[in-house]
Length: 109
Image 1 (cartoon, helix red, strand yellow):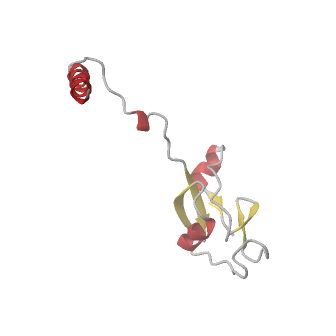
Image 2 (tube, helix red, strand yellow):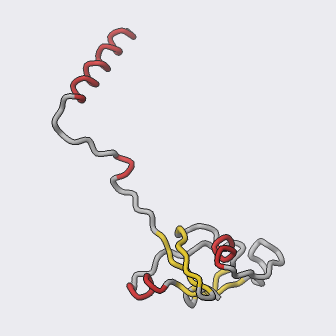
Image 3 (cartoon, rainbow, N blue to C red):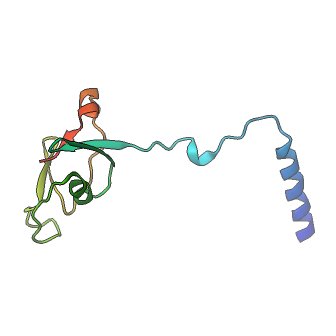
């Protein structure tokens, strides 16, 4: 039984090797890495949407005050593009739809 399966596998591999149709990798067909531009104090950097906001703020040089580190006290709240987000539990927002905001980036305060 194992020999039969091995022969079938070899025949399929050989027939696929000589086919004229281009092979498209499945894992790259639908993936798009979305990056969000964040700015603070004149610095502009790209961050992956959904990454931790506390890491992005640290990379920009913004140092929020942390008390509980669970999101309960709101002492670490940052304003990101006009939205207030708790840095200790928040995520980097997705890229905005407006082209002007995509180029300038979302302001972090």
